[in-house]
Amino acid sequence: IMAISFFWSVGTVLFIHFPPLVKNVLFAAKEVASLFLVIFSVGVAIGSMSINALLKGTVSARYAPVSVLVMAIFVVLFQLVCRAFAPPIGGELMDVAAFVSHPLAIPLMLTLLGIAIAGGMFVVPLYAFLTTFVDKSQTARTIAANNIVNSGAMVGGAVVAMALSAVGIPIIEQLLFVAALCLVSAWLGRLLYAAEREAEALA
Image 1 (cartoon, helix red, strand yellow):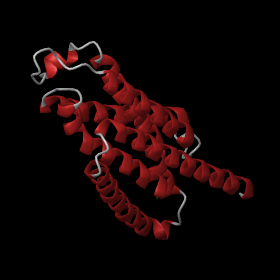
Image 2 (tube, helix red, strand yellow):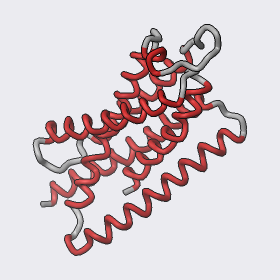
Image 3 (cartoon, helix red, strand yellow):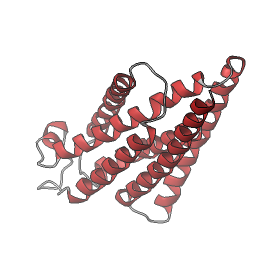
Image 4 (tube, one colour):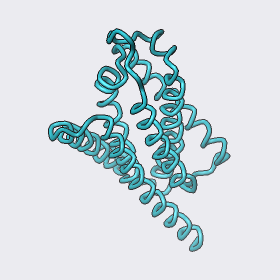
């Protein structure tokens, strides 16, 4: 549950920062933020299908640590590309067409897609793990507890993001905070996989 919650904290911080990041760092219109949300959603779907293919129908957290570490790497790359993004001549916000034609737009969108794919590969097996490795009589209660903790984590992520902005930390630097959250998720995923292996050894 904690590993899933940290993922949703990461997602919440990213979603909150997309509009101001697009406007103030990438100098693009709000439609580009919507494009980012679409890319993220597609990436999570691709990650979900990819991990299902890798696991071949089995329920396991074996790929969770490496998936979220890859996610952290893509977050750092995304931050670096954002930092290198040059404002358009004239100072006007770019529409989607102008943004896509920017030399760094494709690398930026690919790094965002990488974040989402790795995130999907991380979180989807954890949901299956959550419902498979608990007593059937406790499944509904476990799912309810997971939803409550996830909601709290998303609120917590939003509060932390707003607090960082309030003390003057730039949005582009806050992306490194997102990468740090990914490292925590990797540690939790490693603990989960270790517990899975212990359970298999005792079976």
